[in-house]
Image (cartoon, rainbow, N blue to C red; front, side):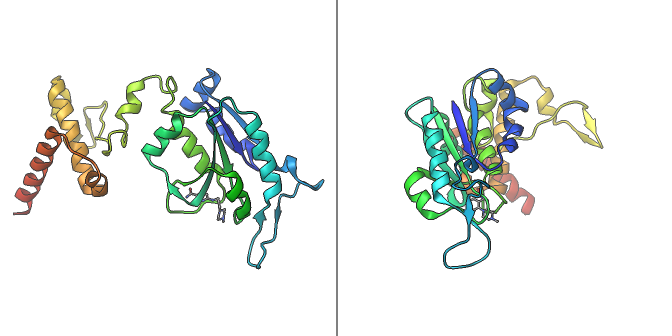
Length: 250
Ligand code: 4H7
């Protein structure tokens, strides 16, 4: 997979291209990265690519022409024919596991990172395939949201995680929150490791973990449970959880 970012701050992407599992995977050639700086396409020697908003108001707006040229330059450098131009913005459709999975199937992504107050709408109308947001909050630029999207997508690219199972077992891959995890020592500040995890009974352990996942999802994210079908084992465990809670309340 080839990912390109149109950004005023290419160096920010070092944190994903150089470190951790994403860094190792890039060095192994599992994905490629390129940053395109729109300043290269400014129509003035000083490299200004922003200007004041028509209609007035605070701040500056990124101009369409240098961004269009930067996106065209990125498109010419694509690997495959099914690339997509994605704009990270607070107005975008919320990023979900399903969307991450969809993007992981593509050969090329171009991520457009906004700064200042945003980008001239006409550039978005003509050059963007998709507008995505990573949550209901604002940050100073699209670079961090772009890197979060990249990390989430790259984890699903075969070989990026040494252990392919971890991606499948991750929270959200199955529509539930993750279960709790424990390692040594056996007791920490008075808290023990749950006995079942030391039983060696893998059937029991799997069922305990699933029940914990259901319990947490019910308590913290009931919206996730509501939009997901339950298999019979899950329905039975959820019934157990509800009965246990009623027993506590009465
Ligand atoms: C596009 C338009 C994404 C991108 C405006 C980006 C949150 C998200 C940005 C802006 C982002 C998200 C620039 C508007 C900085 C506010 C002070 C970059 N924030 N910003 N201004 N939720 N910011 O995905």
